[in-house]
Image (cartoon, rainbow, N blue to C red; front, top):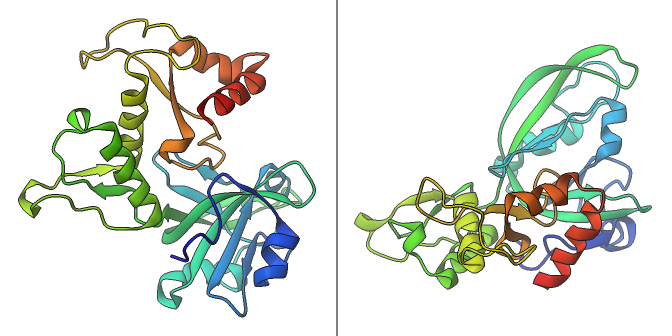
Length: 266
């Protein structure tokens, strides 16, 4: 992985910061670079107008619809650049398109895992064969933690484990016989709960009840929305009571409240 090429969660000008620097087609959803081993992948709400169906799953898997606005898609062009990524040793860098002209937010570096064919409408509402790529974060969805019990792991160590996983570094910490593999999302979740220590970071109240696991019940919220590509990273999570969590997602002042949480953590 290229060190510090882009920072997850940061907003960039697509033309000035990306294409003028590294090349690639500024109008394509999949943009391979001729002079660099990079493939830039862009997605956003506007893609739905052209028959694209992209989805960021809670575990970090990114389901991305291949390129091609009309008729059946084919494994060529940008689609081939994603499909051949493991063999070509290129890097897939994923960006979410924002509302402002040319503004994109960096989600992170991903790698091709699989693809399958689905039936989707094209931009003229004609059904066609479409490709859905299954992309996973570099470093995978799982972490070789070296610990047996996440709940008994220090906040500092949880942060380090998740940070190393995001950067693609290996994370063994003990003899191989004691290593246990966890999903990165579980490590990040436990980190947020450790930091909160049973207190909602939205309203400052104690957790409303004790869960089945015997711990104060709080829900983990990705401040830059996980479903929209927010990084599964310790710096992007906060623990909230159910009321505050629903206020963020469904309240009239949800966006303003979420911005308060971001500023609070920063």
